Amino acid sequence: MNNKTDCEVIRWSPQALKIVNPIFYICIFATMNHVLFWIQFIVYPSVRQYSMQWLYAYLITDLLLLIRFFLLYAYRWLPICLPYFFRMIICYSEAIFDNYLNLLQSYIFLALNICRYLQIAHNYNVYSSNRRLIIIVHCLIYISPLVTHIIIIICGWSVLHKPLGDVCDLLPVTLTIQLLFLLFTYFIPVILTLIFLLLCLNYIHNTHGIQTQIIVNARLKYHRQLVVQSGVFYSLWLILWSPHLVVFPFIYKGSTIGIIAQILNYLSITVDPIIIAALDVRFLHAWKSTCDHLHRYIRRRRSTPVPITFPLN
Image (cartoon, rainbow, N blue to C red; front, side):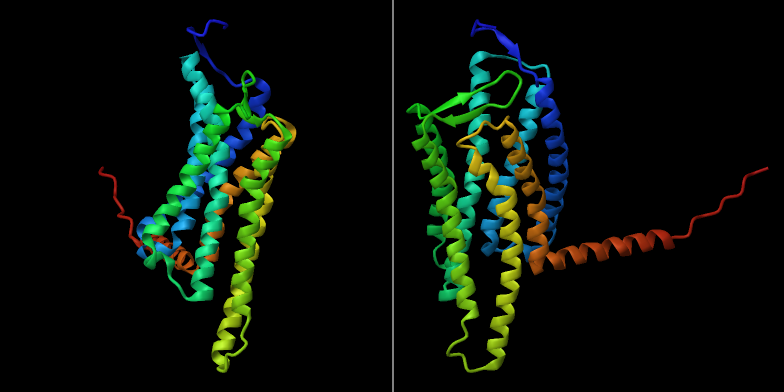
């Protein structure tokens, strides 16, 4: 329709549907994992720690990405007739919030590792000593990328790509803008995250000046544990999450490379709660307690005698 006052029903194209349907099933499985994770968070006070707020903020962005996908999937699946103005708002929101939420995750991890470094290397609990600063950092992380995306659109530094029956996407107009996108969305936060992680590991591994062998052994044991945890988590994070942020300034998401990057990104969302729960001893205890309750419930159900009734003649 050429008349912008008319409403129009937006549907998935057959080609796009072949791509979206596998992602839909991945998102269902991811939602189940996240629901189980947050049940543990609600039931067990031991995992509701103020020092874990960055991890929870990261997982909330995962949930928002899942909600975004399901809403947009339903929007193109249901016969909803919308005017041009509302279609454009939805299209811009679809294009912005995918990049925005993934960008948040990179800076949330950077904030997590800076706070961890201050705790480990300087014995400084930033969560209790600088609560106002933590709140300000949260606000800056959430607001700055969104404002930046809006400014880029207003200045015409990116264009909206809206193919019929497929996802909307924002593409930078020049190579310079593409490289700046890549620098601030990926390289700066990821490199700084790895630097602070290595500083933590180096501090824990350094036992120079410690006389007590027990403390040395404890430090080395903690170092090995942190190396394993960080190695597993950040390896999967970089392998599954990185391609999406690396390619989105250059390639349309509906292309072959863009599709692969999207699938890897949603796989990352799927495994995030599993990895965090598996690598944190508090969640391991919570899962063990839940399994014990389930086993006791099943045993009680099996041991309950079933009444025998005789038919009346």
